[in-house]
Length: 136
Image (cartoon, rainbow, N blue to C red; front, side):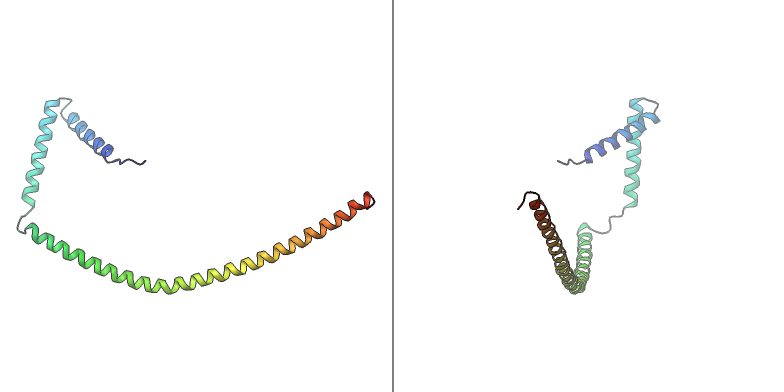
């Protein structure tokens, strides 16, 4: 069974971050915690100032839904066009494959029949020559 490797990667990332802060603080755990909290607060403040909450989540949802619908419509129409083009080509390809299969079967059958005749002839010759040894 295949297990998800996400926990492993998250754990490695957390260990790496912890190691970074421990290294920066010279091995002092309390100093590392303080640096990590300070960096987190700085990132949180930076994030709050750069995002503007002028649009509501409903408007964003409606816009995203409209964009997704547009993408799906475009994709489905392109898929239909491609399917129509591929459908004709697929029929022709299947016909060609069927003809090749029949031709190959005929030629292999003829070669097997020819080989079988030769084996039968050689077997009958060998039978006659061996029969001559015993007087038959």
